[in-house]
Image 1 (cartoon, rainbow, N blue to C red):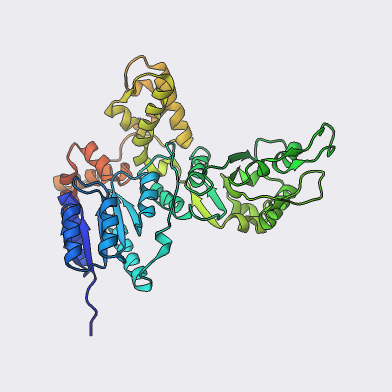
Image 2 (cartoon, rainbow, N blue to C red):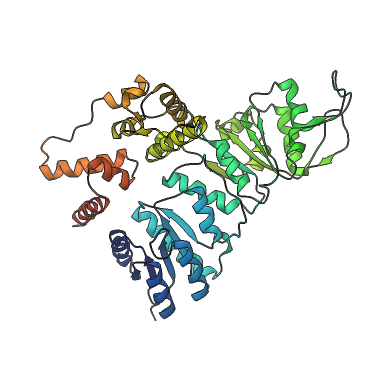
Length: 454
C-alpha cells in the first residue's frame, strides 16, 4: 500500500510568497494547505493533522512565534520552520527557543526550501520529538554588532542558537575584519555563562616572553619582578568564556600547555606546581588555515582537533554583498548615537557604490569608511563623493555587455539575472535596483523558470 503524501501547512500573509511555496512544494508531490494569517492557520490545524508547517515570522494578526507556540498545543509533535525577511541572531535564537525546527530567511531559494522540507520530514519520521532543534535557551541577548540577513549569516545565527546550551569548544575561521569576535561574543551571550566574564586574549599581540604569565598567571617569585601571585586570563574568565583570538600564532610550548588545560580543565601558574581547576569555555579564532599549518608542522594536530569540535566560518563581506546596506545603516546609527547627532542617510547612489565595492578589509573597512564619511560630511545626506575615491574604482569599470544577437526579451532576462547576481541573490534589493516591486520580480522569475522547463 502506497504511503499517503505528507501534508504541509504554509502560512504567509504575502500572497505571492504563499502561492510560490505552495506551487513549488506541490510539484514535489506534497499535499499543501495554505493560510493567509495566523488565526486561519490555527483553525486549519485544529481541523486536520499536518506533517509540518512553514510559518512566516511577521504577520498582521498573529506573528509566527505566537502561531508556533499555539500549534505546539494543538499538534504537539508538529515540526515548524520559521520564515522571515528580518533575519537577526535574536530572532534565530528566539525561534529555536520557542521550538522551531529550522529558520530560513527571505528571499529564500526554492532548492533550499525543498532540502529543508525533506530534512524536516525525515527527522520527524525518525523521532517525533527532535531535541536537536528545540533547545531550551534562557539567554539575554545584546548582539547589536552582528548584522546581516544573507543566507550565510542566517546559518551562523542558527549555529549560535543550537550551541548556546552546550559548553562545546568552538573554532571561528575567517579573514581579518569579518567579525569573528562578534560571533564569539554572541556565543557567550546566548549561553548560560552570559553573566560571567568574557575575556579576550590576543595571541598575536602579546610578546612571547609575557604570554605564558598573562594566560596562565604566575606565583610570587616566579621571575624577576613577580612580587606577588597573579591570576592569568584563563582564571579571570572562570565561569565564563575565554576568547583566544589568532590562535594560530601560539608557539609550540604554549600550544602544549593550552592542550593540557583543555584536557584536564585545570592550569598551572608559572612557577607553580599545583593544578588549579578552571571552569571556562574556550572559543578560538584564526584568520589562517589551521589545517595547512598542521600539515606543515606549525600547529599541533591534537590541539587542532581539540579546538575544532564545532567550526564557524565567517564569510568575507564580498561574499555577502546583500548585507552591505544593512551594515552601513547599522554603522550610521551607531556613530549617530556616539556623537549625539541625527542619523545621516545614504542616497541610493551611495548605497550602490558601497554595495559594488569588494571590501578587502571586510566589515572593519566598511565601518571605518562610514565613520570617516560621517565625520567629514557636513550634510545630513551622504553622497558618493563623501566616500574615498578608491571605492569608485569597482563602479567605474566597464560593465559586461550581453552577447550579440540577443532579442529584446533575451536582454531583459540577462539584465534581471545580472542585477540579481550583483545583489547577492537578495530579491528585495534586486527589485529596488530594477525599479519594480518585489511581486513583479517574483512573477518575472516564475515566468523564466516556466520557460526553462518548457
